[in-house]
Amino acid sequence: MTKDAQKTFTLTNNESGESWELPVVEGTYGPHCVDIRKLLSETGYITLDPSFTSTGSCKSKITYIDGDKGILLHRGYNIKELAEKSSYLEVCYLLLNGELPKKAELEEFTGHITMHTMIHEQVKAVYQGFRRDAHPMAIMCGVVGTMAAFYHDSLDIWDPEQRRISAHRLIAKVPTLAAMAMKYSKGQPYVHPRNDLNFAENFLHMCFSVPAEEYKLRPSLVKAMDRILILHADHEQNASTSTVRLAGSSQANPMACIASGITSLWGPAHGGANQSVLEMLDEIGSVDNIKEYIAKAKDKSDPFRLMGFGHRVYKNYDPRAEIMRESCHEVLDELGMKDDPQLKLAMELEKIALEDPYFVDRKLYPNVDFYSGIILKAMGFPVEMFTVLFAVSRTAGWISQWKEMMEEPSLRIGRPRQIYVGEAERPYVEMKKRK
Image: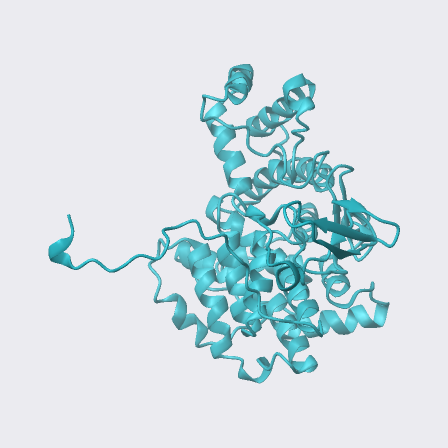
């Protein structure tokens, strides 16, 4: 292939000598794209790209990632600035609407979200159908999809107002459903949302308060919770977001689409990474054992892997990890846990790994999961809730991506192609003749 001055690519078939001009699509940042939508009809060929590492599935104005430089932008705003200066609901508004809200707009949006946090009372009966020891993510997959059975007035995907209401309902109600899943697993009564609390405060209150005593909100924990929500709100076309878009392309209702994203997120290679970090730290056990485990991580024949380092996209320091590291220290100081052995182990592991040429050369820098698991554990969340919290945060990104897709005039159902490598057509053999 060669690129010409008219910003097209020339594709040449070396056998037939035929050539085709393919248009180039340029983004604001990042690599340019060769538009191959007419490739099959014009050439008779399709492309093969397992895991879609070199395939753009859509145009989007929501999130941009430069993995080599460690940059993450939401609608053009750097994630570091958003985490330091903004709030989760402000970021939700930004993702949904494309601009930061003015004061009155944020107040109105916050009011809409707050008024939608209650759950239909009959949804409680759905929880009773699960075993007490059911994984909270299994419960979330079910109850979020169930919402479509209770909110018929906002399921018309072609009505902009109903799309807006569904977006607000999902952002507001998924935290309530998540807190109920946590309470259900503990055998504790559900806690109703409170309209006098902000988003992060309300979520912590629903998760940890009990009728027997007043729950005291700690400012550093509220701040850390809000940051965790902001840092996980959206991350471009990852597995779960792509799942939401693909489900939405079939014209499924938004509740079903978000449920499909939760299902994809449940995979340990996606949403369960911070749990894996804690399990790794428990396995290492002590600072004295770090060098031994570093050697194991380098040994390709050893199954041990250094969790929380490296990222499919980032080939530099994950910009979210730096912010999460700061919050980690603030939370542990607030809770009197700054001498926590697990944090000391994590800090020393980070130091050694960043100085070791093996990890430096491979750009295996700490990612956001390296610290988030430690924070969540310190705050009192059980390990099985970690991925649920990821889903609570990512709901804003999922529904924003779904909304953007539904507003695309050229929307069509997603239908990936395949390269068939099975048997050629052959005659049916009767049972008595089979050897």
